[in-house]
Image (cartoon, rainbow, N blue to C red):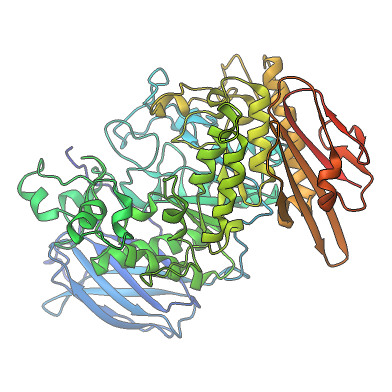
Length: 631
């Protein structure tokens, strides 16, 4: 792909000054990060300056309040320069840097050091109190059709192409906030919104071509910040999808690397763009006690595809760039969390530094990593607090619970027998002993990489409701995928990304089905939507589901019972969740569950509001889930 240089429009960029007409101004001058803040926990800041023939220039800092120019680093590229600053005693101010060539002044640029928002360091990250809603923004709501295409962006909107751009944007998410609040959502995880200036397949956002710029087809940096502020008014936080492993081949770096080791396989690729080592995807090589170094390197250093170059976190300048970029977005936009993509693919020592740097700045923050495996041991390795045999230390509080997700899907769809079905779901929870804190894991019913839940359940509404109830009542942080609440479907075999990420009904003006107005919803869709609203809004106020202990009983005769109990500060609450896979009516002897029923006499179904006596047999009339609030 031929790179067309971007003309950056950051507010901090150069107020250009000239000492003599014999020196030409520096073209395309840009600075990353575009600004910073005083009073950060880490007072070190490294600025990457881009400009034609800038690397050999001397840098001088004019008078400043508490800012020290520590060092400059010349780049192997003639067009990049690194500047190290010490902000330990910095005050909010505008810095002015002078660029000199052989002691001759060439140009200056301003740089903003801002004051932090009150309480920024103490911000609360997402937690067990929340329900996370995952959005693929291009496929959710098209709130501003005027930004569907952009003159500097290569790919244009083609809604007929399942793998093309469809036009969803930040404005669409903002318009959907009342609906999301009514649904019971308290956090939004949004697939990457940063610029992806690729010639095709750019809608998903995982091929970043500018780490400090929202893709103009989604909106702007300012609009993203406004989304966060507006969402907070609806009681909703924003979780940013971050990628530290790879970038897009359309990034300008691919034509002009800041260092000689900026990406993995850089020198080989420069000599021959077809000479690429692809990742093996063998994730256990980085933690297995007998794994060989070359196998580990093939996993960590290989590229995903030829359009996703693998960033080299062992390059100290790249590592600093990525750490600062994550912190910049948290501080700039006011985020409540980070979801880190393809977690284990990045260098693991870097992941320790990256997670520690973020959590040092924001002690109450939360980060969830994606380690896609059905092995709990592999997932547990990456969670903060885990005592690993090799001494590896992580500071990432949460991981995606793929092992429990996989068993949830299979247990509800396979035949109920002594060794299959619900018993596997019961036994999977015994693996919680290997996690540092299992309740900090994020459990989901699906995401942008998995086939749709309703389809995986064989369009069985009862099984679907059991799956949703399990996710929302588990002792985990629950997450749902956009459209699951109205039974969006997909194929069930292999990967079907474009169809899994289909457009949300009603997100486009001409849509015949509209979830927001409930126009033309099928009876099953309306039923599912009402079910999820009742479940999520009950959870919003239920201390038992948010923070309570979990107890469960070995499944018998196709019935599995879990209990959540809360006892703290003079408050108590008990919830009984009963999963029934029987197609016919079955009587359940409640005396077996006396240890969790305690002195409660009545159970009120949170969905139907029907009351049941707890001192006798409970008849389950049909397959499905019954959630009882005990009183």
